[in-house]
Length: 84
Image (cartoon, rainbow, N blue to C red; front, side, top):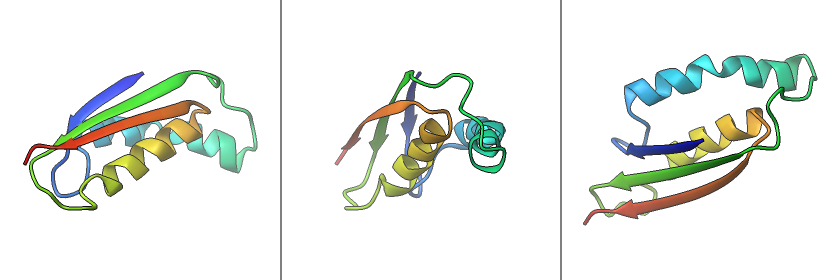
């Protein structure tokens, strides 16, 4: 899965965050029920852009996507770039 998104106020856009929230079932399966993820071993990539030079501009979005991919048992790759 490749996720591409602009970053606003250090986070993901609402539509993408809604998708992440719907994947809570994967986190519960892994950490509450102690079951292996059903679709583990795949790869996920995150590509983000932002319009400011803030040193931590992408930290919130990267953490959210990293937690999503971790809950699903996927390896990750991330690339972020400031537009300024």
